[in-house]
Length: 193
Ligand SMILES: C[S@@+](CC[C@H](N)C(=O)[O-])C[C@H]1O[C@@H](n2cnc3c(N)ncnc32)[C@H](O)[C@@H]1O
Image (cartoon, rainbow, N blue to C red; front, side, top):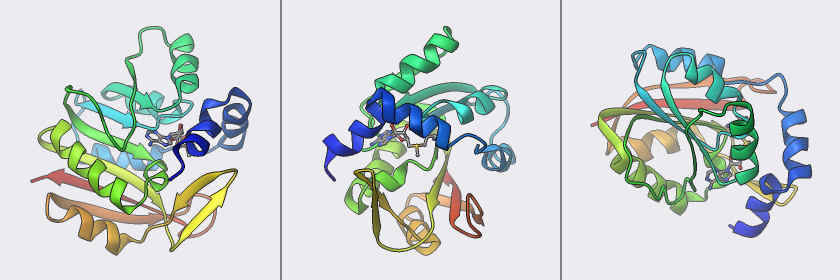
């Protein structure tokens, strides 16, 4: 992955604001409701790739949240609106932190990682998860790699993610859903073994 072009899109104020406009009307409410069936109120949640913070606001209604992203622009924007918010500049590939959480959540972020980066991110997530911690991640469903505006989109299928997680997690559910087109997305919820 070319880190400069991939990060540049969301780092640049103009394109980051374009993303905010484009993403209006979309949120992870369905995903967060599904997570709530497993994760009790008050649990600690780290969101990877929080973007404008739409899901972070929803997560914050139930959980003790930390928002993170590689884009300082998104972090600054969110903290300007929510001065007491806990945020971190974190790359999902490295997760360079000693803090631990009960859950690691991402919504349409890990497709920016190639297969090797995704596998190492999962290993790092195991380290930063508390005992019996949960993950919830959503993906674009399909095959191959697309490129838009210099961003890479690694499409994935349910079986691939199940096989990646099963050695380390109890996979609780993998659910296919519609983001923009029918069955274009899926999410996985899993508990650390
Ligand atoms: C498609 S947006 C999704 C944002 C948010 N989750 C939402 O649903 O609106 C992808 C986000 O992932 C962030 N991102 C891209 N690569 C990342 C990485 N390696 N680690 C963490 N965040 C990353 C981008 O800065 C952007 O905010």
